[in-house]
Image 1 (tube, one colour):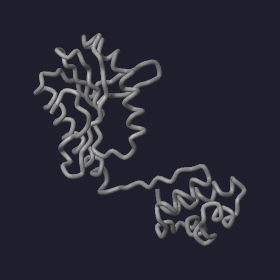
Image 2 (tube, one colour):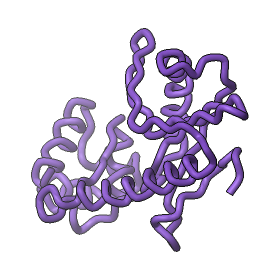
Image 3 (cartoon, rainbow, N blue to C red):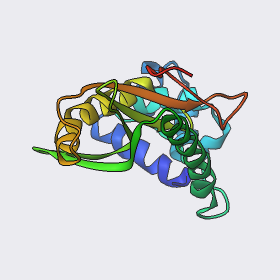
Image 4 (cartoon, rainbow, N blue to C red):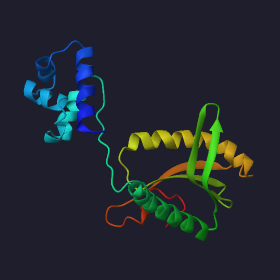
Length: 189
């Protein structure tokens, strides 16, 4: 989304609230001139914190979008995700675990896919792994893991892994070694 469109959105939200530029500025500790800059499509002169404050005062969220060489950015991010998945799968299989990758589930209205499900037969344990190449918000990741954990029993029964205890884990890349996952692995290193 370009700066002009962002400005038009802020202006429409401000007017809908019945606020002047000065009143909105006072709510978020910005000058009327700063609000005017945003509304005229010159938000690149302001910080992300400033933009978030301005939109938050109108019950909206400002989320910048990064683009790079068309679709190559998605492939770049997915490449790291795929490396982490491959590493976790290799570790689990080395321990004798059965592994399902990108397992889908549907429980009532909840649908989704699980990056990795591991089943350790001797341990009678199921492991749900959510892979993140970049862990930005833990709250949404934990929420997703909880939904996946609810979806696992149906998936487990379908693949004859019934009556196993289950746990959830997050595999994320560290900044020092992006291909080495970290997280809680109940089966050891």
